[in-house]
Length: 379
Image (cartoon, rainbow, N blue to C red; front, side, top):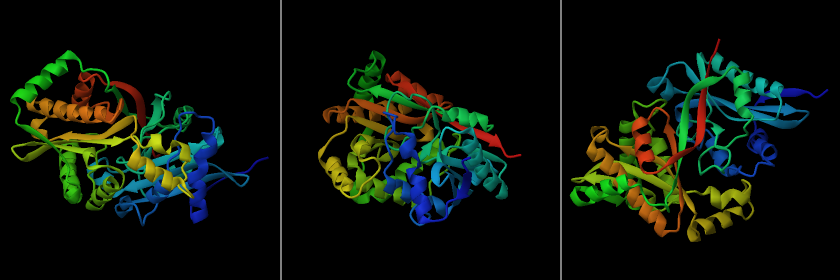
């Protein structure tokens, strides 16, 4: 008889095992892209991830006969308690062999840890926060994930349901073939905008990237503050994001919209780095980092992702707000076409965000992936 043990991660060796759990599970999945091990390690590190300045987390490994066969995290975020629903704990990083016993044991460990902290519900998956990978992929397994988006085995949905988790809300990923022309309605809006608008579009100044990112997130927090799950980023998280932009992306990744010198909107467009890392299988050593640096500098991806877009509240649901949104989308589309990009993913969008969904669907975008957030009361 095999022996299953679920234990708390408490050593560097355990973290190595935690990071490597998916490798064998996805061995036959043609669409899985292994996250860079170094990036996952940094995300899980309290010393390197500013998330841990306002949150705590526990990592659990399922080990069968000495082999790691599953994993899960449980986490409690002070900011989520303040800005969202008090008593909600989170879980994430779920991976599991095809065993109901193992799945149940992993969820039990996460639930028990959250209950000991006084949590009343468990929601997720988040890896680790809502600003990182969120949701379980439940529809759209036919294409690889875009950068910083999740991918999982289809059977995980049954694992979640078997453990008593139910749907909380869906997150949509929209796809746009930017090589195709806009619908005529959008062309008319753009023509009017270009003729009459006082909207000015500009890229961020990389020499002032920290301040520019701070301004972007000021708009983001204002635009999203009433949305499900929104938690404002801290100064440390803003700095971490600024460093990521400087390290991996060019200054044209962020576009700001101004009216009379006042910044009223933004859009972030990043190359789909998963195209460049797919063959690395998560490893940057010994030569993977050289390959990645070369590819970032000298190659162009065929797809991009829009992870963030926002317009100040005073312009939302107005004709000017629509003009701002379509102007930013069109500028980015033209820049991407010039680089040979053909595909764009806009993700993720709350199913309840009807205003943004309307803008995306009017531009010709279509939902092609659905990620689901689940919840469960902790009895």
